[in-house]
Amino acid sequence: MAQGYHWAEYRWQIKTFDEVEQAKEKTPYIKSYSPAYKPVTIVMHSQGNAPGVGFALGVMKYANEQGWEQIPLNMIFLGVHQPKNLWGEEYEKFINAKVKHYIADSDFWDTISNFEKTAFMVGNKYIKGAVILKQYLSNKEDRDIYKYLNGISELFSPKHHKLRNKRGIYEHLQAITSFSALQKRSVQFTFSNDRPDITCRDGDIPGIDSACRPKRDTTLYSVEYFKDKAPEEYTTKQGKEVIAMENGGHLAIPAYAVIQRLKAVKDKTKKDGVRIDSDWASYKSIALDWGNAMSTYRKQKKEYERLTKQKLSFLDFIVPGRYLARKSTQLYTKLRINYWFRKVIYHYARIQIADLYAHFSPVEFINNKKILKISKDFNDGLGNDTIWERIKKTGEQKFYRVEYHENPIEAAKMTEEAKREKAKEEVEGKLKDLLIRAC
Image (cartoon, rainbow, N blue to C red):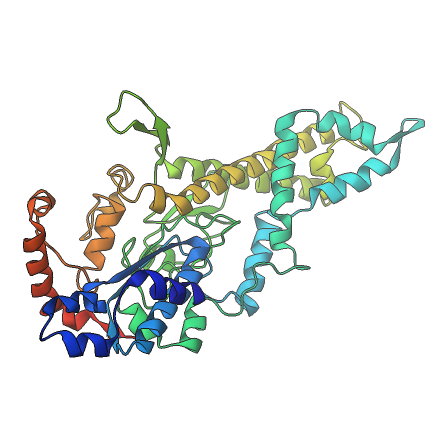
């Protein structure tokens, strides 16, 4: 809030209400120093959405102190992070799913460290765990897999509750200000697969129109795996695609996801020096890789425990053969399960990368004409030209903006005088109804 107030005080360059009122008859041009002629548009992303709203409140406070009861304000929320509370039973279910179902929290290095310090009887002699472990974590890929999961383990640790959030943006705004005024001039855009673990999207902000999808997706995950059936509302209300896995279970893939992954590459042959390439063209294929690995792993693990009457421990996944003869059938079975366990982790990491890309892409590729083209979901009333065009379309009845000309080329040809006349016409006409209270 202080940042917004400071900006308004030193950069907004508006005059007080009394100054404008007293001089407007003799000097009409002074009205251009009123808020109506200096609209404020705040574009926010990720965790910046919360301080962005605080910035808006600071601007409103400053305007109110200058005697202005109403101001023009547009707010655009991108890649919303923690917009609602995640508390109580919903939080516990979320953590339980990540810990026990998706295997996303395990503290590998503590387990490995304890194992390394222990000596095990192998044949007729003791061998340190460090020696045994070395042969199973000998290549970089294996070590990186475990490092990745260990890196996010604290996010889902019940000891820390780092994701527990009693009051999100929506609840906080309702508690400190009149949220209805802000939501009238706000639009949000967050891809439905913008749910990587390190950003933890909790769904769109309630009450704010979405330029991504017409209905809010209130689920906490991007891709979900169900050992049985997916909830019926996923297909009826959420429009998700639910796919039966060959080895059991169902995979739910969200609608309105960013499908392909674009990247900007330097290219001197291009006019602007940048070429847009695609790393992949199917988010669905990444999701299916993980779903197939998960269903296969669960099936083999369940069958092994049924036949042996033994529960597989976490160390069995790290060092599957620590107590077994090198050519035993049981060892081969464990190694096969271990292989699919590693596949689950590997493809889970790929989903995280894809979801993290979905989190940042509305900023980097907001004007890109490729990012929405592949998905059929965006062939709706808002169009699939660019993210920015969808935002403008969603906000056309709420954004305070002067439309100088329908054709941008013709608008660029307008003289400054013509633009001033057009601005005066709209500010004193239709835009009056789009001002909000500065309080």
